[in-house]
Amino acid sequence: MSDPILSIRGLTKIFGGLVAVDAVSFDVRRGEVVGLLGDNGAGKSTLIKCVSGVHRPEEGEIRFDGEPALFASPMDARRAGIETIYQDLALANNLDVGANIFLGREARRRRLGGLIQTLDDKFMLRESRETLDSLQIRFPSLTQPIQTLSGGQRQAVAIARAVYWDAKLMIMDEPTNNLGVPEQMKVLELIRTLRDRNVPVILITHILPDAFAVTDRVIVMHRGRKVAEKATASTTAEELVQYMVGARDDAAA
Ligand SMILES: Nc1ncnc2c1ncn2[C@@H]1O[C@H](COP(=O)(O)OP(=O)(O)OP(=O)(O)O)[C@@H](O)[C@H]1O
Image (cartoon, rainbow, N blue to C red; front, side):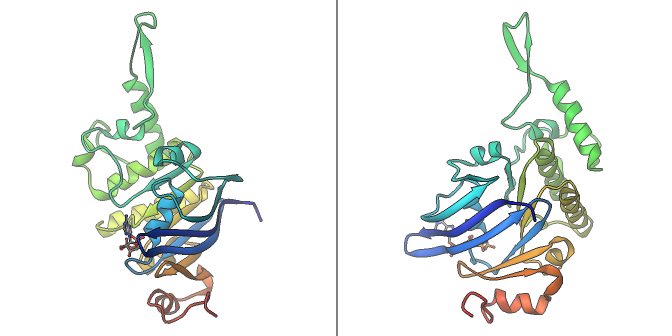
């Protein structure tokens, strides 16, 4: 088996007196989709925010690609290859599709003998189109502002951005929330495409059919603790619900 791309040991995050994440450990390997399940408030978002540089954990170790990895900011985590799609997505609504794929890492070109630099819009559009085509994502126009796109199309732009920048790990927080059924299917298909390209995905969800549709392994959290870790093929929705509501707990066994 390959070395894990992400390895988390004893991770703990406390807000005031509340232990939001309580000594959680798990690994993610290249090319696998890992589901992170749990009811509201279970600690899923807090856990991944510790990985992606939003929160600093009180205790524990995170190793990414073999190195200790406590990122100081989300941009640091992105530079290291961790692309996170939050529920609010972090796309710039007023910019177009191409500009969003290059957000924060814009291509520039020198003009007037190198005296000034301008954004290389043509290059960014061409590269964006190639990436979107390779993922079979179609937009009528790449110069449409993001705010005119549907929720599923926005997810697709965020996924294309991760692919273009060669993300080594993709974290998606409830990506099918608020999407129509065809768009949910497209997002799940894109997750499978990422796996086929050997990009591991952590999928946070409380939608069990989504977890069964795309994950290889599932981790269940309850009140900050990891209560189960299962190969998706060897569990059932009924069993996972029992872990999610706290009726079963492998850690306590
Ligand atoms: N910035 C914060 N400050 C204080 N408490 C927080 C903060 N963020 C999360 N919490 C608390 O930590 C606990 C875990 O929340 P978290 O959002 O990680 O859960 P979740 O499993 O992602 O649930 P949801 O699906 O509702 O987002 C909750 O009790 C929440 O109120």
